[in-house]
Length: 407
Image (cartoon, rainbow, N blue to C red; front, side, top):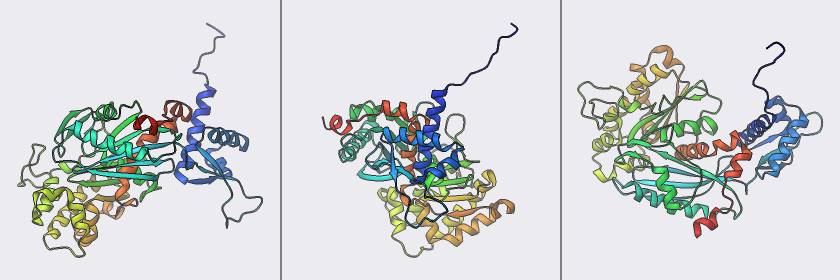
């Protein structure tokens, strides 16, 4: 009909909540930031920034910070804001093959408390869930009594379906199609948002946000956690694949005459640089495979048995670099001490296989977050809803978690 105007309209409330989340993320990433900087970053006027800051302060997410001493600029220094130390938090879980680490992590990425416990070989999922629930209770009991628990994030060494967090395949745990989030929540007798993700993907996320790859939009985080996986970020976006299974670089074809792999193929890269292969070369007992990172970390010089493995690590990285053309490859897990011990062999292997233009633009480095990359990645995943909508996320948070879990 003539005169009828159509369109999507503007939901001012949705815009306001989006702006609240965006401002909160800036403070989360920076730790402390001035209002003037927020005005410049967000392209909003000072009065709008002031109103958003006031609302986030009222929600208990941020607080006023005096201008930092030593900052000199023309005019009056701009007041700053920072994350509240007694504010909301998440629980992050790094589920390894032989142990689990659980931490209470506040906004801003600060780890407040952590606890760890062993996981038996080939554990039943309910047993691992019970162990994690005990660790969650331990770290939550140390939180401020009224601090909101936003959610739980769990990093898993396996294929995690993006749509619902189902663990489709975690070979080194012996799990297939396990709804581990439900198992953990049942053990806690708590209804709280929970998210699961692949450990390498989450390591990449954390290193991109606050580690060695801050400001770098094309990176690969290579995880050595018995098996081999990669988290990939391209143009600032996580590469997940249609179901969330992207990054299984350990199963790139490496040696046509190689041995069998647990995936059913032969000659996978993982069969020569995975923890079992390295432990066998070093003549470590089978029950020490999961401790390979600690064993390598204790070495001051590389035994000769490690050198050909390091060269194969570099050759496989050549394929990874050719495929993804990253600016940085971050070597995590037991690859961290292996690279420290055999840097020249890894670099030489990379030079053999990587195309010259791709090799010229890549840098190999160690994690900026040390052994906490995956743990902090799990925390970032659990925090994501509060940056989408702080108001709704806090409405769903649990403000008496210590009391509920103690009961």
